[in-house]
Amino acid sequence: MVGPGPGPGGGAALENANPLIYRRSGERPVTAREEDDELPDSIDDREIFDLIRSINDPEHPLTLEELNVVEQVNDAESTVVVEFTPTIPHCSMATLIGLSIKVKLIRSLPERFKLDVHITPGTHASEHAVNKQLADKERVAAALENSHLLEVVNQCLSARS
Image (cartoon, rainbow, N blue to C red; front, side):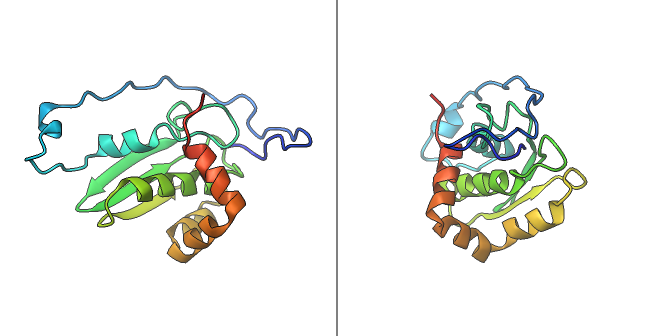
């Protein structure tokens, strides 16, 4: 998405100071079938999107939905595939955005789901390196052991006031 933001002691320049903002799609109505505890509750593409749409951009006071970052969500046989597109090709926050999406899904979905979170092909200068990091379970686990990084991810996942 965008580069390092203003730190506690100063203000670094934004990589994408004026991102294009999109309208939110609105909440999905809950059906009677979804509320019926007696019926199996499958998880569809829209439900996956609903889980990640409100993730905050690490730098701007906007959500991934408002920045149109989440391009495609697929759910097939306990595998969830999420493609996301950073707002600029050299976005330094792409790994953090992908990690935030992955953490939100890990925390929200049953363990049976296999997650594939990656950058839309051809949309980022370092897509191969970022995708490799996001696909590596050990790297993701190590990243989440870093208390500072975990705090930043949790800020991305928290509701804005």
